[in-house]
Amino acid sequence: MAKKINKKTGFAVFIILFAVVLAVMFVSLFLGSVMISPAELFKSEILWQIRLPRVSLAALLGLMLAISGVILQGILRNPLADPYVLGISAGGAIGAAVALAAGAQVVILGMSSVPVMAFVTSLAAVFIVYKLAQVAGKTSPETLILAGVALSAFCAAILSLIIILTGNLQSIYFWLLGSLSSATWSNVLTVIPYAVFGSAVAYFFSKELNALLLGEEMAQTLGVDVERIRLFLIGTASLMTAAAVSVSGLIGFVGLIIPHFIRLLVGPNHRYLIPISALSGMLLMVAADTIARTVLSPTEIPIGIIMSLVGAPFFLYLLRRRRVEGK
Amino acid sequence: MSSLKIENLVCGYDSRKPVIKDISFSVDDGQFVGIVGPNGAGKTTLLRAVVGLLKVQHGSIAISNHKIEHLDRRELARRIAFVPQLMEPVDGFSVEDLVMLGRTPYLERFSFEQNDDYDAVKWAIDELKISELKDRQTTELSGGEFQRVAIARALAQEPKVMLLDEPTAHLDIRYQVNICKLLRKLRSHRSIVATFHDLNLASRFCSRLVLMKAGELIAEGSPDEVVTPENIWKAYRIKVSVKKNPTTQKARYVLLP
Image (cartoon, rainbow over all chains, first blue to last red; front, side, top):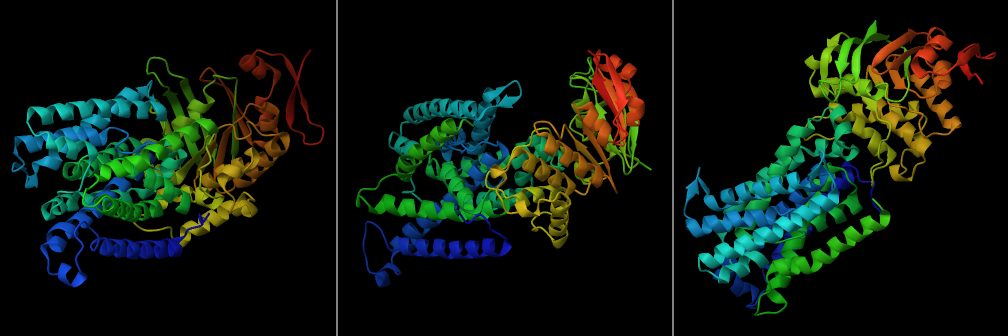
C-alpha cells in the first residue's frame, strides 16, 4: 500500500485527483434524462440552469460531508463517526424544515435562515448524542453510534410530523431520502461560504488532529488544547453538515466511506487526509448523482438511496471487523 | 542548575483528598532521577502534574526557573516531554511518522515540516538506535521496540525534562537494561525523571532516587542513601538487607527470609 506519501507525491496526487474531479464533472454535464448534442447543449437552459448548478452542488456537498467525516473521526477518535450516523444530519434537517415552513425568505445576519436554523438543531443533536454516550467521563465508540442512531430515528419522526402538519407530503420524500433534483444556483451560493470556511478550519487544525492520533492526553502534552478545539471542530463539522442538509436533505455515509478509503491509501496524516478526502468526496458525490439521474432515466433515484445502498453495508462491515479484531 | 524544581506540591483528582501531599525536590541538569515507592504512592500522579495534565492545587512546579502555570501549552511542550506507561501505536503510521508527532509544538499552521523538524527526528531516531526500524509500521513492533519509538518521540520534542512512567514495565530483562542504559546516556543536556517498580534496577542506573509513600516523600538522595533497610521498611513494610553489588558497587536489596 502506498502509505509512504510525502510532500511531493501528496501534491501530485492532489493535482491529479483535482483534474479527475473536473473531468468527471465536465462529462457528467452531458449525461442526463434529456440527451442532446453538445453543440445544442451549450446554448440550452438545461446546461446552465439545471445541470451545471446540480453538478456543482453535488461536488460541494461531497467536499463538506467528507471533511465533516474526517474531522469527526479525528476529534472523537472514533472510526465509525460520520455526520449521518451521529444524528447531526437528521437533527439539522429538523431546523431546516422548520425554517422552510416558516418561510425561507427570512434572513438572519445577511444569511438565509435555513442553514442557520439547521446548524442550531444539528448542534443540539450532536450535543445530546455526545452527552448521552458519555459514561463516567468516557465515550465508547459503540455507545456513541447507538445514541446517534436512536436520535436519528427520533429526529426523522419529528421531521415527518412537521412536514405532515405543514401539509407538504411531497417534501418528506426530499428530506428523508436526500436529493439534488431541485438544485439551483442559489443553493450553490448558499453552501459555498460554509464549504470554504469548513475546509480552511479543518486544514488549519490538521496538526492538532494528527497529535490526537496518540490520544487526548498525549495531544495535551504536545501542546494541544484538546477541550477547546474539540468544541470548535465539532461545531465546524456540524455547520458544514447543516449547510449540506438544508439544500439536499439527508445524504448519509459519505463522511464514513471516504475518510476510511483515503486513510488506507495515504495513511492517517491529516495534512494529506483532509485535502485528498475532500476531492474524493466531490468525486463520489458527482458520480453518485450522475448515476442517480441517468440509470433509471427518465425516473430519478434520490442520491440518498444510492449512498445508503452502498454506505450501510460498508458501515456494517466496519462494525463487524472491529468486533472480530476485538478492538 | 536545577531544571525541574517542585516546591510544596499538593495535587490530586479531588481537592478534598489530594494524592500528592506536600512534596518538594529538585532535579539538576544531567541527572537521571528514579521515582520509586509502593503502588498507590502517587508516582504517576506526580508525573501527570509536572507535565501539566493535572492542576496544581498548592505549591509550585518550575522548569528551568519558569513556573509551569506561566507557560502556555506549546511553550510547556517544548520544555517537557512525557512517555506514558502505555502508548498506543498508530495504525498506518511508520516509526518516522510517529516520532514526527513529537515536533507538534514546533510546527507552524498551514506549513509542512521544516528541515529542523526532519533533523530533530533523525537525531532522536539515531539516539535511540532505531534507524533500522524507521520505515516499519508502528503496529508491527514488539513491546521493547515500540518503547524505544515512544521515547524517540518524546526526545524529538527536544525537552529540558523528560518524564517516563514505568518505562521498563512489561519488558523482558534484556530490554529493561537496554532502556535504562539509553536513558542514562540521554540525560546529558537534559534531565530524566522516571518511575520504577524495580528498586534494584533503579538503584543500578539512576543518579538519584526519590522514595515516596502515600503522596509523601520518605527519602531522596543517591541510591546508597535511599536504598536502606530502614527506608524500605518505612515505604513497603518488608524486611530486607542491603548489600553492595560486588561488581557495580551499587546498593541492592535482598529479601530476608
